[in-house]
Amino acid sequence: MTIRLEIKKVRDGAVVPARAYHGDAGMDLAACERVELAPGARALVPTGLAVAIPDGYAGYVQPRSGLAAKHGISIVNTPGLVDSGYRGELLVNLVNHDEAQSFVVEPGMRIAQLVILQVPPVELVEVEELPDSERGADGFGSSG
Image 1 (tube, one colour):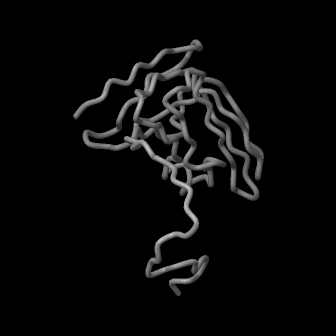
Image 2: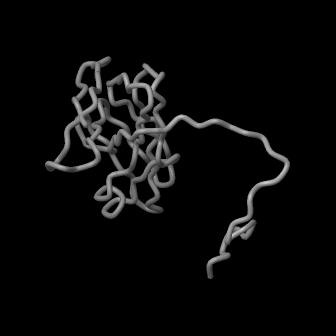
Image 3: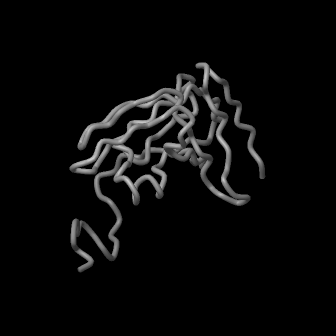
């Protein structure tokens, strides 16, 4: 099933997202202005785009593996969540994890990926007790 994703350029220099290869889950998001990230710094990088994600879906903004592996560039709140009702500009909260080198984001540079996923409706039901499970309340490190 194909969903329709309406997209609008809200700044000059915005690049409409595209998939690098047929079958890719993510569509590359590009920066629309120059931003310099000092070692350890973070910045909201504008894409110049707004989207209308259909009800029942959400957008997830995820890092690009090449930027992470080669330069230590990631996303602070990965994955960033774009709710279906949001119509503002997509901003990517980049962080430079490199301890020594600055990184310059140039306009048109692919900086993140947008993945659209279906989100089922959820009914919250407050209860006195939860049903048992094999894991129970075991937390961090519980699986060894």
